[in-house]
Amino acid sequence: MEPIEGTSADAASAGASQTVKAQLGLRELILAGEVAPGARITELWAVDRLGMSRTPVRAALMRLQDEGLLDAVPSGGYAVRSFSSAEIYDAIELRGTLEGMAARLAAERGVAQPLLTQLYECVDGIDALLASPKMSEAKFSRYVELNERFHRLLALACNSSIVERQLARAMALPFASPSGFVEVQSVARDAYQVLVVAQAQHRAVLDAIERREGARAEALMREHARIAHRNLENALNNQAMRLRLSAANLIRKESAK
Image (cartoon, rainbow, N blue to C red):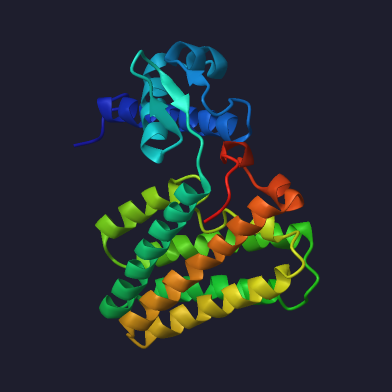
């Protein structure tokens, strides 16, 4: 039977697209500091600000609550969250634990050659960027792109929809993405050396996966995530670095643990 144009499936797809658009728009407002921590966001305010209908906005607000950017307010609406350094530390640790599990499963179950090729293309691209210690803004931006792609592909390589889904949720937590602190690192004196270490870990993880060394792959990936812990501490203790950190306004001014 030929598909019928204008079906409910088409409407559902359009509705999902509008929800994502609203979610991205609201997240951008929060991360850019246009809505301060503790500020209340109502459905009507978001509808007016985004110029969208209530249904996708309502769904977007619920998704941002799931991500951890918003807290529901008992009297109605949501409040923008702030985060302690300890909470950010835990979010990074959670992401590292799940990525370690993904790497172990990839090693134990094996990775299809096309996907493995894509992973190696990412690290080859990073090698090309790091061929010279002079790191420009453009090179850092490209590093972020390749690094994020590597981590997305690694999540896919575990061949577990459950782990992949939970890892995606963990990466959506504020400051917990694999590249969340790379821009901060770009102004550090040892920026190039840290990127070289991270890249060596990328290659070591792929080597462990190919050799079916699950425990080694897991340990390497968990250690890899800890680079973000170091960058977090640097950002909290260095004003120049903090200014480079996206959504720094959401971090409560406390000492890192």
